[in-house]
Image (cartoon, rainbow, N blue to C red):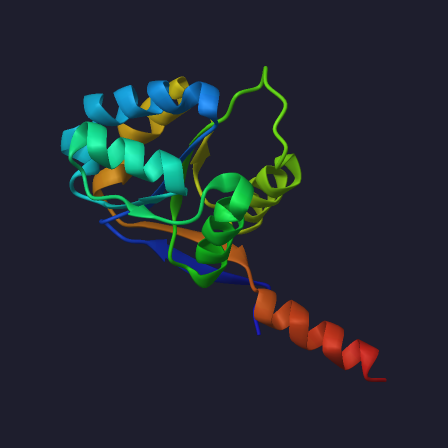
Length: 157
């Protein structure tokens, strides 16, 4: 088995939308500004954020649980399963979050799986206007199946 495998993000992106309470309004406004682009993609998000964006923009947004109630972990699981390939997460760096370990876990899993992630408006603007938004994008990711097999073999000795 190879150390890396080719991973393809399709033309239609599966985008997770997340925002801390102090950034929800900013994300809603950003989504409205980019409604035409976002309408061509599958959207999901943590509970409150998903509902607020759907109500404000009219875009369909599949909601998971609220972040503090496990929504961040649900989004992370979708990344692992290959069902989320793009994350917009307007985080609030000036406010302590009770579920900070969950947020860090989500950011870590996005990094492990080489998923594009924006944590502020400027990065989100750059990402959504990229030529890759309307095209397939292929990139190499670590072959975790090989790592697990090698680890199991080493532990079984």
